[in-house]
Length: 467
Image (cartoon, rainbow, N blue to C red; front, side, top):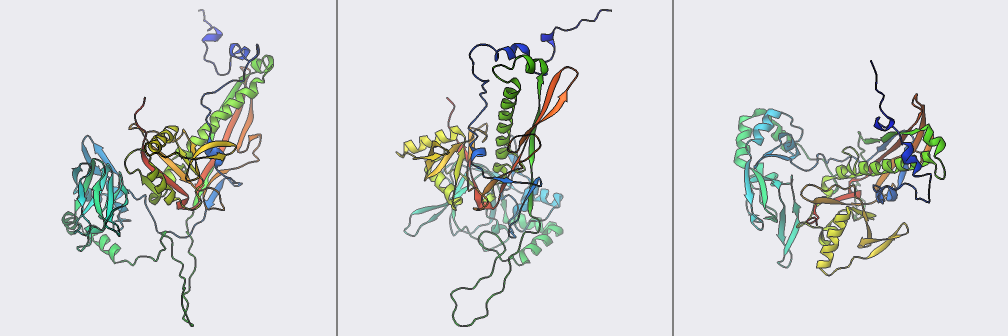
């Protein structure tokens, strides 16, 4: 029986071939180029904190804020439904985990639609329903001191209105509510909620206990209050206090991005002039790892910035594209020493179009030796790792940076064995029986938001049509 041995070019390659290697060994040439290399501004502007033990603990004052502030819904065709477990966002249902009861309550919501500009509620009118926005945007509006209409914020997908209306017979709408876009919403009437309580003893008792429990003393930021007296005269009895710490502070463990680089010994021996083949292979591998590192710092569900912004720090655009008003709202959310905006290049272009439409011309500032666009003096830096949804929307980040400023910090450990760059090493793994050299290339990193108002996210940023 005759065995056919495949020609070398037919075999599955596990390392760089000699034909490609020769391209670096003859003629006047450039080093290998890579289109995937970006500016990686996030890695450049983050202050990096040394994490010697592989984990970083963020100690904070005790806070009573829980949940993500959204009641998520799921859609099947044109029909939408509240996710039962997310009803725990309501303060009087917090901690109630009876799935059967919550599912029965979710079934009582009815779906409704509103057109853009339609008035949903008038200020001062009796409120008797909970409204959960499935899709679209509504605006809370009021009347200013001189009779003008004043916006009190935009509520987008997953946001809800009328929480107290279900448990307070005297509840009224504090602000008017108007649909900014076409909206789909789910509505639970007070009478249906009361009927559910009458039928479910466990649910009724939980709600009654939650409403009767004394609310903890908090400051405007939701942290346990520190009692202080001021403006007094004489010798009054001063309040006593202490600073309560979070007893279960969050710890960030360093994440890792890894790959095994393989280089044939024949290539390393014979084709190393004028460029070192191993060095060029390693250089481009490191570039790819750094690109993945920045992607994870933005998008990782555990420590990524998009998923670690506080619910109160998540804003939505007033209309669609990012306007100067939206950027000002974001600055108001991160008002203490904002350092940088981060946005997808297409989002920056959309913001530029909105500025041009208003006759505004954003200034530029110097950032690490380069001139970059800025808004109100805060640099707007490109980050192509911010995702673009199928409906052509993205997000804009604004952050304060550094430990001293209680901002956002990057985490890494330096001094690794066989370190190639800070927080990244390339370890020789040996030569196999096919004469292929292997190197394990690893990057270790994470990020931490030290206090909630260090990071703000402008969501639902429309980029316009492709073309």
